[in-house]
Image 1: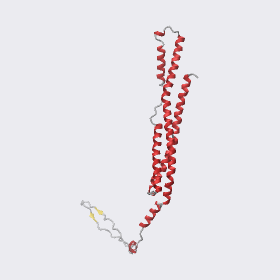
Image 2: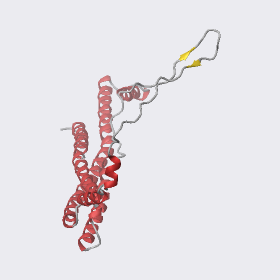
Image 3: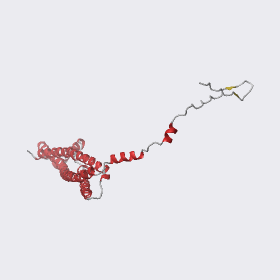
Image 4: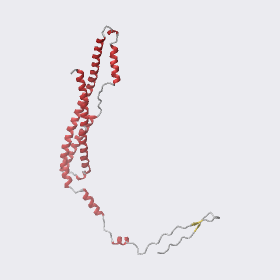
Length: 242
């Protein structure tokens, strides 16, 4: 295997490694989603906590959980943000480089060289040119992948600490949540206390009257005569008795 083939394979390997590292980001993102769900549940039920020893134990472990979670988020962001990977030049630029190599050997300095010798030198320089592309790209891509892998490993370690601390914090939280009164029962009790019995006077006022109320009178009709601009109002009709 010559150098050009070796560095070409290494170049493609680093790009495959980049794809694998990017795909591996889905696992910590999924874990963080579940962790935020548990933290949201904690926040919604903070009322069940107090100032006793179990509550203090929860606050300590919960604070450590948030600290580890902040590290995990930081490492996760650093594992995929602000990375630039190197690629060979555009094909048109590569053609320009090869043409410049050919023009270089057309100089008068090489007029005594035979055509086969010039072609050999041009081929050698073209191979060195392509090899140089791969080496320049690898100088950028390998450190990027190493740094990405390091941050992803640190993120995984921080997430392991988050899961352990989250489990430890669930023990005092569970004890406090189930040892205190149920907030839903407290709300129901408060609602029952707000319901007051209806007095006899209110019951009498709620009874309908014995006789129906008078029916509303219809509006008066208008009759406009041709020689008058103002209409004459007609008396209201009395409603018929039922």
